[in-house]
Each structure stands twice: as C-alpha cells, then as structure tokens.
Length: 239
Image (cartoon, rainbow, N blue to C red):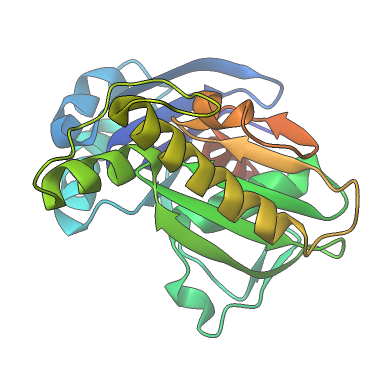
C-alpha cells in the first residue's frame, strides 16, 4: 500500500496522519475553529499522496479543508457512509445518514478485530456502536460526551457549577458528584449496549475522553488512538 494522508474533522478537533503502508509517519491535531491553519501543515505532506477525509463539522469546515488541500496533487476522497465498504455492512435504516466519523471508526475496527466488537468514540458526543462477527453494523447509540454533560449542567441550572472535581465512590461534594455522575452515565450506556454482544467480545475505545472512561469500564477493553484515522487509511487503500 502506498502513502496515504488521513484527515478527521470533528466538532472540536481536526486530527490528521500520514501513513506509509506500514506505520504512521506523522500525526497531529488542531482546533476545528482554526481549520484554515491546516494549510501550513499540509504543505509538508507528500504532495502526490491521496487524501482520505471525513468531516462532521459542517459545510464551512469542509470548504476550509478543501482550500487547505489546494496544493495537493493526489486525489481527495471524502468518506461518506454507504451500504457497505471495506468488509463492513451498514444496517442503518438510511445508511447514508450515518455520521462519516462513525462509519470510519467501524471500518477501522473491522481491520483490527475479526469478530464482534463494541466501537466507542468518546468525543464531543459519545457514540456506542455494535459490530457483529460478520462485520455487520447493527446500530448504536449517541449521547452527550463527558465534557458536554458537565457544560449542560452548568449552563442549564441555577446553582450547579462547571465541575472540576474528581471521580469518587461515593462522592461527598457537588464538584465530585457531577464528575462522578457524568462518568457513571457514560460507562452505564456503554456497558448496557455491550450486553448485546457475545461474552468476551472486545470494546474498542477511542476519543479525547477515552483516558477518563477507561478506568470506569468493567468489560474487555482495547484503547485505540485515532480509530477514525485507521478507518480512513483502510478506506483509502480499498478504492
């Protein structure tokens, strides 16, 4: 496989990586609000390499990214969800409405795990997706991410702060109660969906909040950095 550049534009961060077919040569991230600054980084990328891109941050970010890619001579391939790709079948009622980042993560997961697995991306939103042993995406859940939960409590109540506490069992102050409650909510949703999979199936956990959630989960866990980039890399190699 030749060199591929993968770009994952999320709601909060844009992640990118350059892969030579054997390993990641370089990876990085920047705030989505500063998408146009990716142009300076792109100037150092291999100019002939194809780009595989997914974007869930809206049309303005997509336009900014296209401008950043103007100097690239390789093709730019935008990943959109479909009925099937890279050994994954999409059972969403309308397959094309599945988020491109979730689709990329599922493709990445299928490349790492041959059997059934739970695919969890803990970012601005937390997504929890079921992938069966045949590579069929059976569906999943979306909930507010850990950070968003804390901000929602602070912004929509009169007396609750934006909590900077710690996880505690049991929490005995409001700061710890909010942090602990948000982590319990995340872990509870993940573990409930995990029950639908065969015993022993791994949970692949990725995203910015993954370090916070990992210690709270009581299931077979595999931390995967930048799972969406892994999926984009596989997608680029298959087309």
